[in-house]
Length: 225
Image (tube, rainbow, N blue to C red):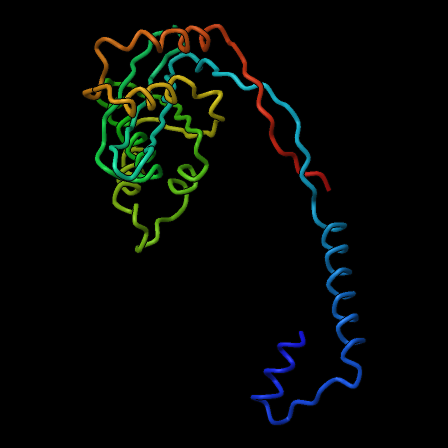
C-alpha cells in the first residue's frame, strides 16, 4: 500500500496522501480479513470420504469400451489402448504406440481407436468409459475453431453419430485398471499392432478381478454447504 501511494504521488498530480496512513492500512487489512471470513462462511467446503469403485459388467446386448492414453516424457512415444468386454466375460484388448504427443491427445486417440475397433467388429451398442473428465468434456462440448484437438474431436463425434448406440460415462482409474495397465505396458516398450492376438499374461489378473467384481477404495471430495 505504501509503495502504491508513493507511485501515485509521483505520477498523479491530483493525488493526496491519507491524513493517517497507519489507520488507512489497518482499515484495508480489516476489510481483506472480513472478506476472507465471509468467503469461508458462504462458500461450500470440501470434505473427503471413501467410496468403493469397481468395473461393472455391461447389460445384455451391450459391450463396454474402456480406453486410456498417456505419455510419460516429451522424448518418448505415447500410447493409446483399450479393451472391449461383453456381459459374458469375453474381451478384446487393443492398443497402439503413438508418436510424440501430450496425454490429452493420446486419450483422444485411444477413444477414436476404440470406436473404430468396436465398429469394425460389428458391435451395435457400446458403453464407453474413460477416467478423464477433460476428454468427456471435449467430446460433449461444441468444438471451437481454434481448438488444437478439433480434427480428432470432430472425427470422434462423427463416429458416435453413426448408425449405432454409443453412450459415454466417466469412471475413476480404479474402474479402468485393465486399460491403465495396458497403457503402461506399451509405454514400457512393448509392441502392439492394434488388436492383441496374444494379450500379455500380466493383464489376466486385472481381467479376473473385474469379472469377480473386486472393488477398490478411493478417497473423493464432497461439497458440503
